[in-house]
Each structure stands twice: as C-alpha cells, then as structure tokens.
Length: 143
Ligand code: FAD
Image 1 (cartoon, protein in one colour):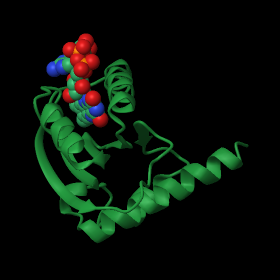
Image 2 (cartoon, rainbow, N blue to C red):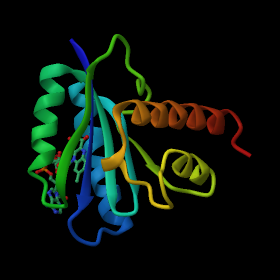
Image 3 (cartoon, rainbow, N blue to C red):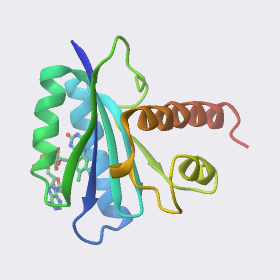
Image 4 (cartoon, rainbow, N blue to C red):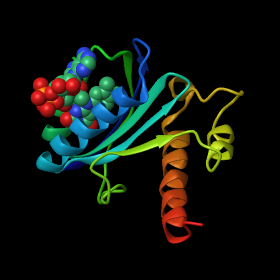
C-alpha cells in the first residue's frame, strides 16, 4: 500500500549549507535504495518533509528520522493512502524559499512567516501541488 506522510520539525541547532547537503545526500541514497520519494522544505528554521512509498517503509524511515538530533519538535501533519506518487522523480528534493518561489510560500502563510505547524492537511496538499508544478515549469523554462 502506497502512503504519503507529511511532518514538520524545527532545526535544533544552527545548520549550515554543508549540513543540509549532508542530510540531502544521505536521504537521497537511502531513499533510492528503499523506493521512497518525496521533498524536504526548509524555511525559517522549520523543516517540512513529505515522504511517499510503501507504508511499512515510510513508517520505518520516519522513525529513523525522529532519532536525528539535528531537528526537534516533530509533528505529523498529514498521513494518507495515495494511488500514485506525486514526487516520483525525486528521491528527496530540496525546496527552500528563493526569489523564484517566495510568493508561493507567502500564499500559504497566514502571516509573513511560513509556519507548517499551523497549516491544515488540505492547505499542505495545495502547497505541495504548486511546488511540483513550479519545479516542472522551471525545468522546462530554465532561463
Ligand atoms: P550512517 O552511515 O550512520 O550516516 C550517518 C551520517 O549522517 C553521518 O555520517 C553524519 O554525517 C550524519 N548524521 C547523522 N546524525 C547526525 C547528527 N545528529 N549530527 C550530524 N550529523 C549526523 N534519512 C533518510 O534516509 N531519508 C530521509 O528522507 C531523511 N530525511 C531527513 C530529514 C531531516 C529533517 C533530517 C534532520 C534527517 C533526515 N534523514 C533522512 C537523515 C536520517 O535522520 C539519518 O541521519 C540518515 O538516514 C542516516 O544515514 P545512514 O543510514 O547512511 O547512516
């Protein structure tokens, strides 16, 4: 059974770009081997991650990620069965707030800060739908 799990957590200490690269590198290698896909979003010190794949595998990976001391305050925000993957092209894609997508972050925020903890499942799904559309558009239109 295919599921999608979305959770938020806070960075537990200052993380530099090398730390993020390290997290991403391990995520991509492990997830590819496990057949897990998804995206990791980082904004204002908050991670928002979506993991999709076989239910038992996603649950196992989520529990492994919970043990990681680089983040804290994990909260599952959405968990659902899906019929098809949304992020089939990404073993783990990174989404940060850039000039290209800052309007998108603002669109789904109730104030100037992007706060996934306060977002409902429907809003999160809308956010990720648009993220995927944006990335596909940017890939087709690199300039
Ligand atoms: P190892 O071979 O033991 O590698 C561990 C490596 O991870 C170490 O070399 C070190 O560089 C780094 N590391 C682990 N813990 C820490 C720490 N506390 N401080 C500094 N460096 C550390 N893993 C996935 O497999 N899939 C994911 O989708 C995924 N998403 C993540 C999202 C977030 C927000 C965070 C913080 C971590 C995520 N991880 C993910 C990483 C996961 O928590 C484990 O660190 C990683 O899976 C272990 O990799 P490994 O099996 O290759 O173990």
